[in-house]
Image (tube, rainbow, N blue to C red; front, side, top):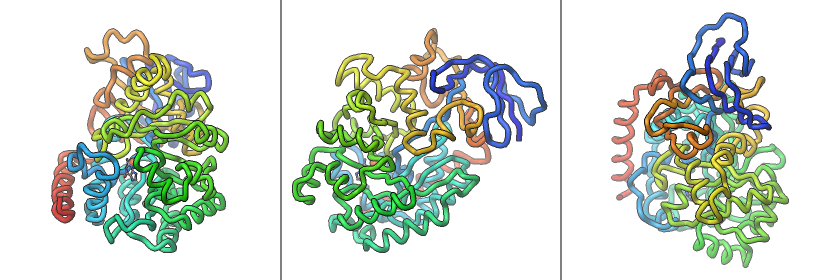
Length: 440
Ligand code: GUN
Ligand code: FE
C-alpha cells in the first residue's frame, strides 16, 4: 500500500523541530519521503491543503477500561473515587463490557488524533483489550493491572502475587509484537498502595530481565503519599519504588505531582519517565505537577488523559493546552511553550515508550502514524503560528484524518470500518450494566 499526502504543512517534530511544506509519502506502513513531491505511482493520494500534518499523538497514561465509567465517578478525591466507584466498576467488568469500553475509547481517540496509547487495564480479561485493539488498528502498549496488596479493594480484584506475575508474563508471551508490531505488553503494578513489596521487587527484576516497561501511578495525591510513607516504613513514594529496584529507564510513572527535590533528582538520575495528566489532576483535585521544573532537570515528561472516569475527555488537545497553561499559573507564561507541549505529546511520548526510532516524528524510516488537522474553522483564524494554533486553539474535532502504520483509520470525521452509533449504543448499555452490578 503506497500513499501520497500532498500540499501539507508538516510539523516534523524532528530534532530541529522543522516545519516543511510539501509531501509525505508512505509505503508499507513507513514514511519514505518528506518534502519535495516524489515521482512514482500511488494507490491513493490525499490532498492536505489547508491542514497541518503532525505526528499522531502518543498518550502515555490512560485506562481504556474506564471509558465506560465516564460520568459515574465525578467530584471526588483520588482514594474515595477509587474505593467508591472505580474499583467496584472494574470488578464488575466482563469480557463484553471490556470490549465495549475499548471500542468506545478507540473511537474517541482516533477521532481526536491519538494514534498510540500506554494503557493500564483492569486485573482480569486483558486478552480482550488486546484482541479489540488489534481490530481497531491503533498502536498500544497494554498492561494488565497488578494488585495484590490491600484488602480495601473488591475481592475480585485481589490477586495472589504469583498469579499476577504469571498472568502478566502470559499476556506478554501472547501479545508482544502482535498486529504487525502495533501491540506490546507492559507490567502494570497499579500503585504502591495496592501492591506488596514482594510484587514490586519481582516486577523490577522481570522488567530488567525482559527489558519491559513498568507502568504505574506515583505521588498523584497527598493522602496517597502519606499512605505509602506509612506502609513502607517512612519512605517517600519514589524513594520506596527505587528501594524495590523499580527506578530505571523502563519505569513510566503517572502523575508525580507531589515529588520532593530529592525525588526529582532521583527521577532525573535514573531516567524514569514521568507521565503528566493535567486534566485528571485538576478534576480529582490532585494538584499541579512541577512539570517545567522536572523538564529543566532533564526528566522526560509526556502526556496522557488518564481515564474517562477522571477527565472525562480523551482528547489530547485538552492535555496539550493544559500542560502549557497550568505551568503559566505555577511558574509564569512560557514556562512550557505551545511548542514544548506539542513535543511532549509526540516525541516525548515516543521516548517514554522506548520507541523513539519508530515513532514520534515525521521522518523517513519511521512508522507512518500521522494526523491532518484542518485549519479552516473560525476558531483557528487568523492562524499566524502553527504551534499556537495547535496547542491553544485547536481541538480534537479539527482532525480530518488519522493514519496508523500507513492505514487510514479515520477520514472526514468517519472511522474506517466502524459504526460509531453502534459503538456508543453498546457502550451505554454496558455502562448501565456495570453500574447495576457494582451497586452504583
Ligand atoms: N491510582 C491508582 N489507580 C488509579 C487509577 O485508576 N487512576 C488514577 N488516576 N490514579 C490511580
Ligand atoms: Fe491513571
